[in-house]
Length: 214
Image (cartoon, rainbow, N blue to C red; front, side, top):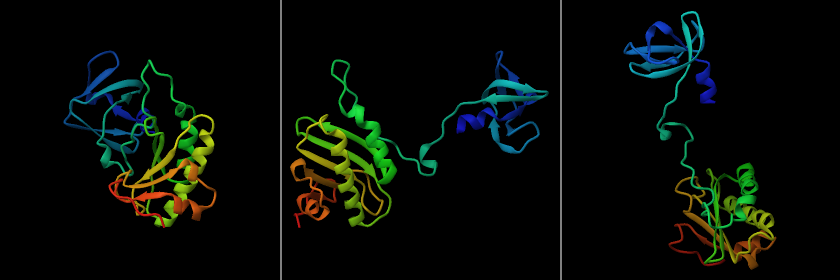
């Protein structure tokens, strides 16, 4: 969206010094840029800012500029973790790569924000991570139950594991992903939520301690 917006900006040509054929440098200490020639003001450019010309209308120059902004200043910004560990060139591609788009879509569609999935061969454990917003703990557990079941269906015949582990932030929406954990043995993954709840181990402190089964 930002790239599309920048393509539509315009700047008075007299306010910039030409450096190369299509590059200009802002000369005044501050110069406005607008949505169109004599259009609404969108912001300002500081002296020394380099812009790339992509068009012209009389004394107005259409331009493209590239820059960086501090992510935490953007509403809803979060640093995404690696979705799947990258396999080395000498190793075959993990079967998780084939099902990754479906897993991600499934989680993002109904349950939260997908953070990643990986398989630990040493522990025979599948780990799936996602972030949730504020909700009751019972509602979170039902989401985890649904995610586990659907993930197992998607991976049937592709990845065999002894345990499936889902990691989220705390049910109230706070904390890091990994603070709340539900771990279920593959053999104990049943269709009934109440039975699953009894057979699943839960940790509310990132795996430091585990609750006793009810």
